[in-house]
Image (cartoon, rainbow, N blue to C red; front, side, top):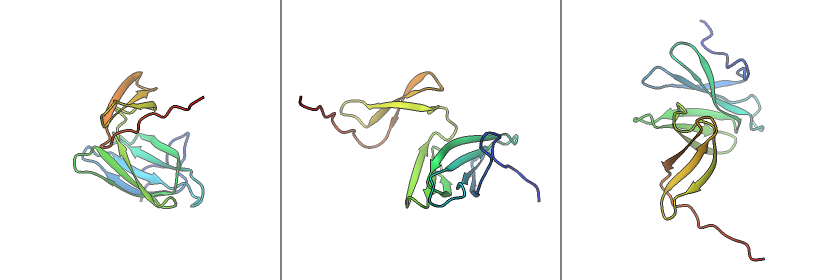
Length: 138
């Protein structure tokens, strides 16, 4: 046996949990965080060259089982203590590089978002229309 990943220097693994590989040889694993009732879990990726990167989190609710869809567009993560499943788009952070503010295209299912890390604005089809803005009456 040998250690394949112990997290990153900034975020050492606390409770490494479920692994899943993509077709390029990247290993994704959930780091549940160690406390079932505190939202401190993360998603980590280990590249084929062994480089470990913090992909997402620090506030996930005990991330556990994971799966990647056949097209490798989405990474699904079970949050055990939140009783739900999250779907992440773009597991390589090519399109979503530290996303920030968002807005829907009027009458559309396209959600536009600013990328703080990529200095760009991108869009993704989320399959549902956004709600109309509500304005208070003064």
